[in-house]
Image 1 (spheres, helix red, strand yellow):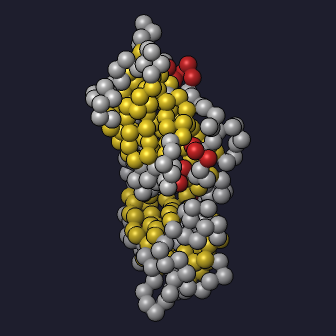
Image 2: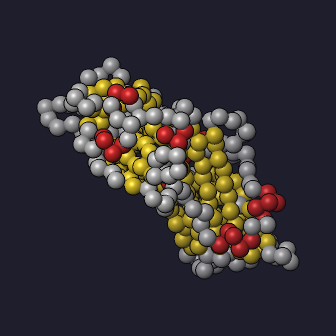
Image 3: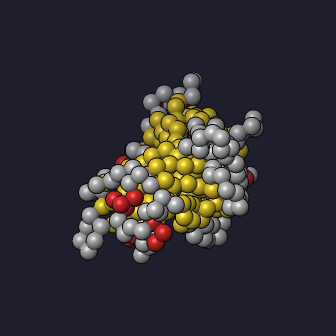
Length: 306
């Protein structure tokens, strides 16, 4: 059984703030989310909840990933615990206790919250549930919230199943004022090219936001189903129509890859692009190639941004 990790007393003071799911912002990258539904006959027909599991690889190759669970509407629950059945297994494993919220009189409100965050930059003892390699391995995992009543009887009260992980924009938060951005799908190169990663998928985002002191802008590539633990190169078409190597990314053990340029962090557009504004990159070809391989794994044509 994994060591438990709860939010402690501070989380109990959240009270009504736990009545809605925590937002999963655009900075969280690869994301799987599922609702939790009452288990028939468990006596929690009015309860509801949700699960968010996410993974992000930073540009410095470090990773940060997390699991968040929220519930509300529990009745007569003196405790609640999170259980996970990993893909391919039949036995559920306990992950940890949910922090149950209290009102101003110290009465339980029926709401609870659990969170664990694992950041490769820090070794604070946090663990990925069920001994998995990454949160992405939770795709298709069964999630349960088991409640305990005043007589210490444990009941499976809520359940759900995390679907396949999806991409979320990493560079920008939703609703950034004045932002002009476009995301296009990266595809396999056409025949007769035989790409080395024939099941790879990805997308590329190009964006620009006017602001005081000069526009903030950038490019970001997200890819999955790459070859695990491999090095890749990013190639971009220059003004003369020739492809130039402009960056590198490393795929994770799950075949996920991320690369970006963000001028707000002091970076500039690749000098090989011959442009200092992303608006000049319209119609340029961009590729991901496995290091040492000439044929690309994924390609796209950059769209127009205002």
